[in-house]
Image (cartoon, rainbow, N blue to C red; front, side, top):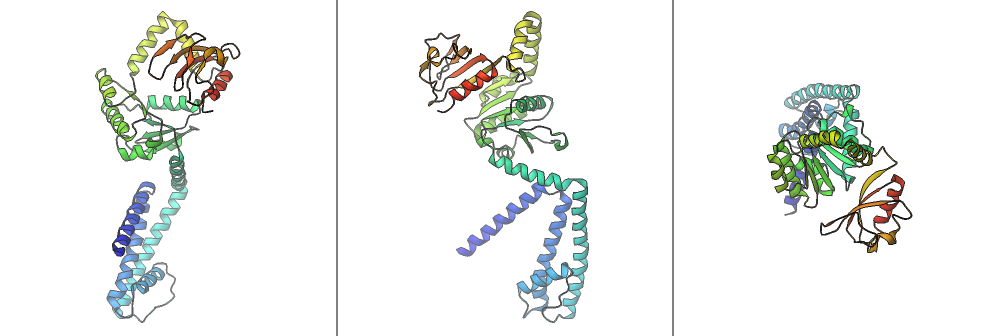
Length: 356
């Protein structure tokens, strides 16, 4: 029973090591490491098979190691002619394999692959610690705009893309995962189970549909924003779990109309939703159950009188929306406030709305 446990444990370690090697190392380095491991294994079982007693597996392992490393300590036990011929073949193969291994390490150092490998390992360690972040699927034209906006607002996020460009990665708060976002394993590597929201902006409606479905199954509490190219995709994305569906063409068309009919309104909305404009911004804040704002009226919070905050609307926990609420309206716990004001004042209200 114990022996079976050890065998399963060793197999699991071997599989895990191979997965990590395949994930991090280039294929030429994997070939070099696999060749050295294969020679070590052949030599370990080869010496006892050729020489017999008193050779043990450990003797074969040690003899193979000093032969491949060209240390030349001498024979552990007297070798027969077949054993010496086996040593000659093993030493020649070891020299060529180690030379290839050394050249690959040198090439990685000179070519910058080693630095990239170490950076990727650091990134994996950071990914494992991330929590309540955003996951962005796709780093095309729309994905880059999303990343730039999140970076300006100092939000932590992870980008999933099939062919990311680490050389062009100049974001401060974002990490990247290489892979296909339609695969559950890749989504889990991006920490989807610990994330608070996912934005899927890949070019294909089918991929966005599949990503939305997979993400909803992995994390049922996730807020999912999906991109839709075709009008028919909107309803399908909502059915499989999308919280919000964004159509770039519809949004662009609406903005074009607003720019002609209501240019002042459009300019005002753009100004209040962009983080670089500090004078006036619109913000959405959720009231925690232990917040000092919970169960108090708007007048009692002094948001309007003392801080100059305009309460645009209140979204109650049941989904009811109150527009321009009066001072005697009670702010319920788990409600959402839509506020308009100066950035410094909004930051103070955000602290008040948080857990007390």
